Length: 157
Length: 157
Image (cartoon, rainbow over all chains, first blue to last red; front, top):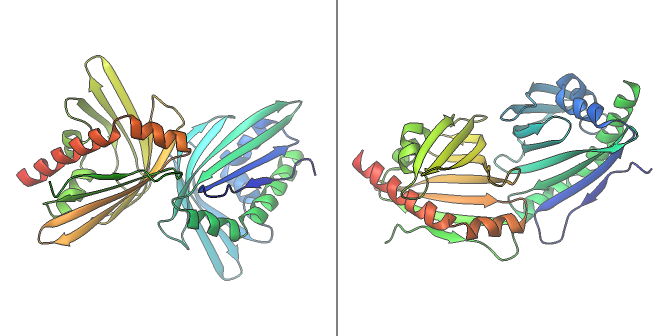
């Protein structure tokens, strides 16, 4: 799997760094982040329903989404501080199960040429405990499954 | 100065923690953060002009401000992720002189009783270098002067 997700949680610093390549042009990967109808098809782990009540992928916009597992609803929300087309985004991120624990995450959309691209993420948490909690919550599995769906989605487009 | 600003920049962690008490009720201190006409009167260091083009102090709102020093304009912008009246706010913060270096900051508005209150801030930076740069930029002086103006403003209200 040359396109596997790499996740790094550096010792003693409240960060999660991620990297994932795609056999898809950067424009397609960016569009799958901008369009809420596409976001609903790939973001989050396998086997969950997904609702995207709000998704304004522009600088200053806001977003919310719900992962649904039977009767359980897992709600998330945040703001988009910066969005630059096919290039860069910065957003806040809150899981309402841990209210007021809000991270800030940047994503670089890199054009690798030959119809390939790379996403480079840097998430920063308000405490080391919050970062460690996110790592142990299964975020790596959920994110990896989500990116696999994203790759299939843009390949089929 | 029992109400002096305390600033802590912990070794090896990308945080700036702040604490400042006020001889003013928490409602007045909160209102001075919510109303852009008041924000323009106190935020930022002494001797600068101030413009507040955008200030929507609500959950999901956005803000921008400009410090003016003669011909120089220092622009800042961000979003408010959470705002709870007289209690709590979380915002993003970017100085456009260092584009894409965005911190996330929480402020707790604490009621100390007897018409006194305390602000407790926790700012988190995307790198240690960004945090250190903010500390050495004179932010402590600027913030301290701003809070002194805030105290006079709410005392005179």
